[in-house]
Every structure is written in C-alpha cells, then in structure tokens.
Amino acid sequence: MRINLITVLYFKISSFKKNDIDSDVKIIQITHENAPFLNTFVKNFQTMTFTSLKPQIEHIISSTEKTVDVRLKNICELLEAEIPYYNWVGFYFKNGDKNELKLGPYVGEPTDHIIIPFGKGICGQVAVSNKNFVVPDVSAQDNYIACSMTVKAEIVIPIFVNNENIGQIDIDSNTIDPFSEADERFLEFVCKKVATIL
Ligand code: SME
Image (cartoon, rainbow, N blue to C red; front, side, top):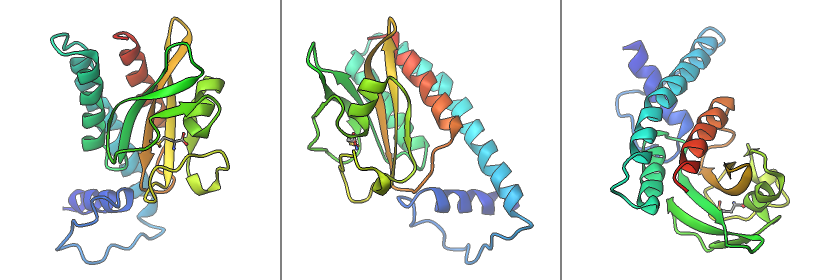
C-alpha cells in the first residue's frame, strides 16, 4: 500500500498531464522523514522504467518490416506513453546539405517549427555544439523557440552517424526541472540505436 501511494504521488508530481488521477489519496505530506525515501523511490522507479524500455527500443529498431519513419514514430509513441514527464517527443534531422534542421517523426502537439536554422533555439544550438542540452526551465533561456505555453523544460540529445551530428531527439516536458543524468544516459542509448538504422 505504501508503494502504491508513493507511485501515485510520483505520477502527480512528475506529470501535470496526468493530474486527473487520485480519488482516494487526499493528503500526502512530504516530510523530512520520508523525503529521502521518496527520492530513492523515484530514482529506482526511473531506473526500472529505463531498464524495461531498452529492450522495447531494440525491438522497434529491429522491426525491419517497417519503414525507418514508422519505427522512429513508434519510439516517440513509446517514450511519450511510458515516461510521464515526456510530453512532446520528436526527431529533427539535418536537412540535406543545408545548415538547418527539419522535423521528422514526432508525438505531441503539432508544431510550426518544421525547419530550424542551425544555432537557433535549443535544437539549433545542439546542431552546432554536438552536445546534450538539458534545460530545466525554458523561461530562463534567451535562445529558445517556444512551441507551446505548457512546456516548462526541454532535453535535446544529438544523434551521431560516423561521428557526424546528423540529427537529434527533442523532448519537451510540462513539468519543471524533470530531467536527470539517468534521462541523458537513456536517451543516448536511444540515439545510438536510432543511428544504426539511418
Ligand atoms: N523548443 C525547441 C523548438 C522545437 S519544439 O520544442 C518542438 C527549441 O528551442 O529549439
């Protein structure tokens, strides 16, 4: 029962999207006594989630009867469905030999930002820096392209093929400061797998 209550709490604090849950949990106080336990629980929960998602990612990647775009869309669908604080999940790829990114498969609200010039926004900066970009609070970023008023945080991880940065996975969250190093390591795994089918 304790685990169930804390599971509910975890979903409540980590996803405003699922804020319709809970009819029987009225009050849960986070106290000095239970805060470390909650932290450990959330970390373990994340580790379990990422561990169980890895074989599912590998399965999608190896489904060669599907086109690459369908497999990428399936990855977006899986991540958006299974990780409560991943609210928009999509891929951007270098657009031919132009210095710009083009939107690929995605799940979430439609965006106007189909093309993003290199250097512009979080995505455009990752196209140039070749580095992960974790944004705990998008309102604190000057060089940011807003897609939706509900987005609070963003993470972008580059995809390399033959050491060349050819695109990225981009994730928006409606929760402030939700991403940890565990997300980075997991998404690097996803990007490495994706690189094998591009
Ligand atoms: N926020 C991104 C733009 C892409 S959307 O998140 C879909 C950025 O600043 O590059």
